[in-house]
Image 1: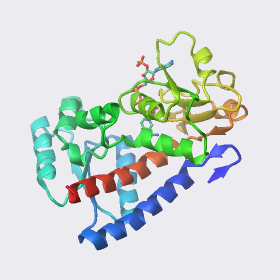
Image 2: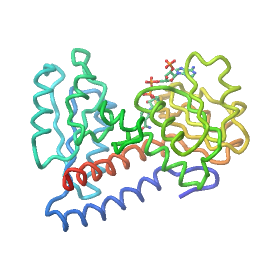
Image 3: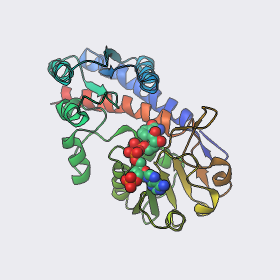
Image 4: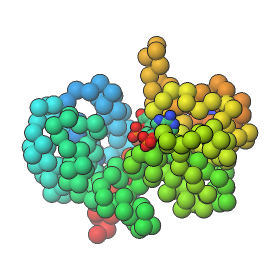
Length: 286
Ligand code: NDP
């Protein structure tokens, strides 16, 4: 799975999806039906369409059931909330994901709050967020969960290590910082107002970068031997997908590094499959 010092997220995600595939078979034998993931897309954002397609494709690979609900960009917020409520009440649906971003006239917070906590496969519902921060049973957001699997795949002991997370969003930076803290790392969160970013990132034994700025982190900002996880998904001038980390210079310094593409992205989708299993099991065992 690991080639040289590159952490191969594609290979790891294939392993996780294979794990889910056998879990789906076992669950069907035990409960008489498969887990079902429902993905809602509103409008025709091309990037969202690709993400949604990949999610549905991954679900098909694992053998679970999936539904894709494509809604027009003009749908009213109330109509969308009604569709979500129907799915909340549908006993055959285990996971509900509404692809973000949504058209401007729809309040994303209200949408997230409406998805039932038990079916919130993205782990964005306030009840799941508070569960994460209070250390209670909860659904962990897919990207942070995938990042932890990537770090674990290289066998690094997090206890007592210095972890730096660049970015403090609710979907990546903050939750991954909490997961690192749970594993007894000493965690620093850097952001756009951090005074000397390089001085902070150079402290990191584990560096997670989730900003959305191509090439923000360069080799001289990385501590020799650090594990570097690049969450960024940016398009460069040629339209090629690239991360927040300047791969060429950082790869020489890091002990392990994730590429873009082929690092965090595929793991996010694999963990979505895991979360769907988690939701199915909690509902069946409730
Ligand atoms: P947000 O835009 O929500 O957050 C970006 C964060 O980066 C903010 O906290 C911001 O700081 C910080 N930031 C901005 N500029 C700088 C800077 N110059 N130095 C330090 N910090 C800075 O982004 P997301 O967390 O949603 O996403 C981050 C990246 O990860 C994006 O490229 C996104 O596409 C990608 N992504 C990839 C996923 C995957 O599956 N691979 C999943 C989710 C996201 P401040 O808070 O001060 O504004």
